[in-house]
Image (tube, rainbow, N blue to C red; front, side, top):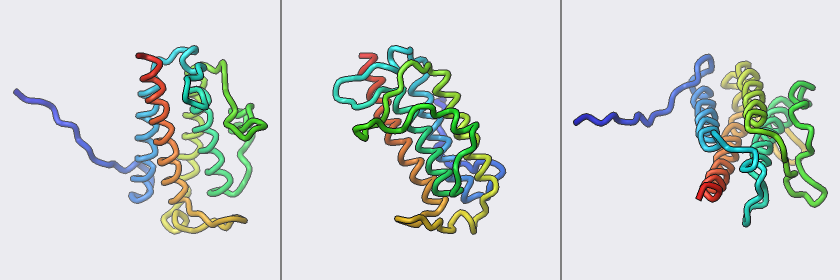
Length: 174
């Protein structure tokens, strides 16, 4: 009896220097597993605020995309996003109390389109990053940061929220 074995390896995203391509592959892998977790969610599930959670799944998906844009533009590119990217974010990031804004009424297709548009923009802009720039710190008023660290942080951030979303999906489907 032959069971197929999983291959647990890291690949290199094509068309990038190998070191950068491995990190970007990791970023893409987290996104793939996030999308697997939310596949098939209904509007009610996206918009339902569960006891013990401060945000809806839809709000977390919006937040993940918004943070990716913010780190790409503010820290790596040090410029404002173009109007095409800004158009994906009509709702402010936080409410008056400093909590994540709640995003209601956007269907799963809209959320996945936003995530894809933001990721496509990030991957395209990182095609211009070489190893020297990858490790070149950007000087900001309160800290310095490299594109390498930004990608690490985005992986960590999305993985954290993927876990929250997985827990919420589990609670919704009990």
